[in-house]
Length: 188
Image (cartoon, rainbow, N blue to C red):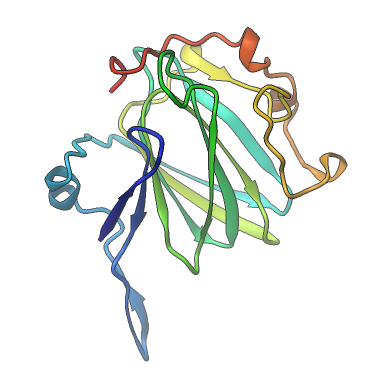
């Protein structure tokens, strides 16, 4: 398993060691010992899975402290562009967005720490998305930011009219109006 730091403190790309033969493939998608050896100590308590059609955008979502979540995300089928926005006040990357393609082919995963908003865009006919969380979902602590916030300056590879977005996500606030209680260095 290869763990690569990004320019965003606490955000890592995880590349598994994939073993293939004439039967198919095998890989460890998570190994607590390897994570801990790299200083990544989490107690994952909840797994979530979704299926989305092409051009579905889900996000940008987060949970406020004390219910914030670290997420380990990956794609089981299909392909998505995955996005993580740093919402930790005082962070050198506050308000900036990281993106990466996650697919069943590349088998990459993204470890998204607490204090980030998360979203993804399905770029294949369908995609099955899976993620582990280190805290339980709490409806009262839900937060979010609109996908088309001009301050974020995110260009999605799909025309806005073709996006399939829930009414709830269309009505999320812009970053400047969002409730955020993450402080860089205090959120873990």
